Length: 299
Image 1 (tube, rainbow, N blue to C red):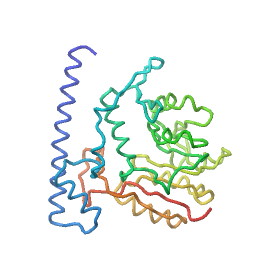
Image 2: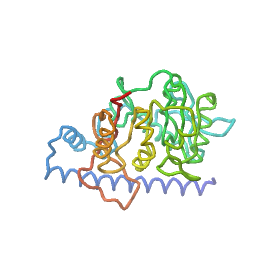
Image 3: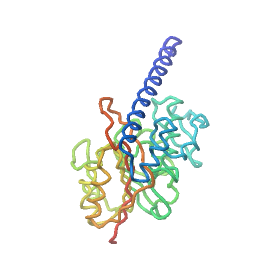
Image 4: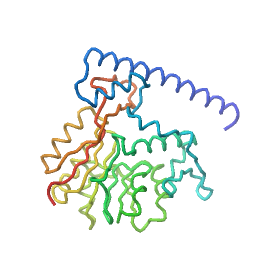
């Protein structure tokens, strides 16, 4: 990249950042105006609104976010593969080849916030966790921070990730654990073709049984659940299921999983989902429950 290209890139980023802040402030005012006319009675909504009154709009509304600063993160380059990585709990966590240092810092900082003990997006807690020797299915693995954080105790992990750049990064991250890590470069769905596979079909071809399934797939969680119906009914794995991508998912999935003999628990707090759809207009109640922790009532 020559000097002119770098200048253009910086100017473009700054314009995008400025516009993003202006748009976020507009949404913030919309939310505060709505709740001023419709005061919330739910304590979690009350807390989210009170936080928003004195803070900019952000994904998380808890003070725990203040523990993290992306500028404190160090990014390194691996000369053997030219991929960038951070040191995560003593292990290298690699990122997409196309990501620059600032993007990686901000992304990793966000990942740390997501899995903070006080975050509404945290997959596990002391009562709902991976046990020694468990088999983990990570559906929508992306960078793989969740399995990496638990790599010493899990017996085997299947990473489902269709993005080729993420697959390359995952190969680097888990290279030393080839004996218990498998990467499946397909979308997980309720159908089976060259790009998609269902959990039920995958298990029909494998002599393994998942103990824990994490599902975070950008709003198509319903398709994943439909494609693992027999797995749920037969093996009853623990399920950490994201519910913030689509309004109403928390209630809908809670009912569906309860009918399949699961105890449903939510994480504490709410989050605001920053949709990638620029044409999507924010709608009440604005904040969403981030996650379901589903524990089987039958074994």
